[in-house]
Image (cartoon, one colour):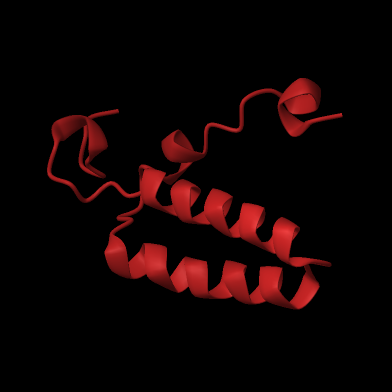
Length: 76
């Protein structure tokens, strides 16, 4: 069963809006996630798919673009 089916949409972007997430934060998080993927993924195909997912997810969570809707200072 998928997470979304069991618990609903995780709303990661919304949950991270109270924190500044810029390029530095994205890159630091990716270092840790990709280290884990490289250590634990059983083969190259899985490693590549997980890497692509985490890179996209990390970029999606950035909220330092200056646009009102993507800013950590956006009114709640």
